[in-house]
Amino acid sequence: MDLINWFVPPGVLDDPRKTTRHRGIAKALLTISLVAFLMFFGVLLVRGHLPAAEYAMFAAGILTPIAGALLIRLTGDITLGLVTTNIGGILIVAVWAFLTGGMISIALPGFLANLALLSTFGNTAILLVMGAALMAALVFLYMATTMGWLPASLIADADMPGLMLTSMLGSAGMVILAGVVVARDRAIVKARLRSAQHAAEQSSRAKSVFLTSISHEFRTPLTTILEITQKLDSEVADPLVAELRGSLKHIAAEGRHLLGLVTQVLDMSRIEAGDLKLKMEPVRTDEIVLPCLSMIELEAQKTGVELVNTCDSAAAWMVWADRALVKQVLLNLLSNAVRFNRAGGTVTIACQAAGAAYLRISVADTGAGIANDMKAQLFEPFARLGAEAGTIRGAGLGLAIAKQLTERMRGRIGYESIEGLGSTFWVELPLAEAQPLRA
Image 1: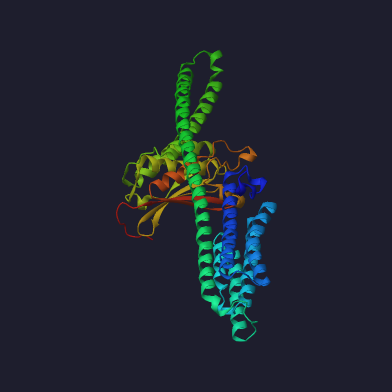
Image 2 (image 1 turned 90 degrees about the vertical axis):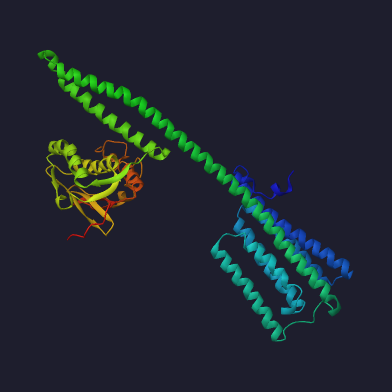
């Protein structure tokens, strides 16, 4: 059985990411124990015999990291195990230093191992607390040295140079080996994350390709159905058959609705797949606004909504945009403003400078506004505000597509809404040439 795997909590063995993290921590702790044991063996060879207190200190130094690894295995809590090990390490080194010379002790390099453990936490609060504890131990040793609180050193003066070398080498070895273990395991985790990200991107592209393909497959029969329905409606002459005219109109309306949904899905899949090609060029404001108002006019008349255009003063301004895409964005905002308006309400489209480099085109309605708990979802794909009340039809892609298209054209999109009073959605597009600011 793999010894390192034994120190991994059984509950995380099914999760490769967590298993790798636990294995890295266990390796680092066992490495510190191994280096402490080698230090003990080296000191024992040099001196031949140690006082009981030094045996106790070495035993504590060897067993404390192992105890921390066992605690992590039992509890599954890496933070608890590392904090416990670090506090134990600080106490061991501080006591050892107190018994062997205070601020000039051979034990002080042992604090390097504690610093190596601190680097594995990845938690600012714990780093600060443990760092403060380590610094407090150093301040205490300084005070003990300067105030004469230290007992007679356990180490003879003649043994000091060799033991200092051993201590420095051992501490450096702890830091280096523990750092190498943690770095290698983090590299493995990063590699797995990159692989998972690549798989997710591949899956997203495959989904987009599938949606594009299936959307095209839907569009063709739907278009055919609509054409046949329109032809039948125009050829109905018999009074008996004429009663079916209402059904034909219903079929046509539902067909157009389905075609619109398919078109939205197709647009979103093209955006996500990166297949959307932009044709950026200078476009006059009135060449955007007037065609969109004309297309939405019939829908507005059906619901008694008045369309108001106040963009005349900016009609000749030029924006840098894709002509077809900016119309799609504006038409979406106008359509929403009509659909979400009250009967007999007003939709006002306005144009004004947004700083020196952008033109803002805003669409204001007099509808019910947007509830505060719904605002965070506005531009999210498939967020169908009002669907829970059964009042909204659609895939919830309109605003998400509008946002994507606007940002692809290096523009900005936003809104203001007061529940019960109405909403104003706006897009800001870069000006193709500098324009004087107008009041």
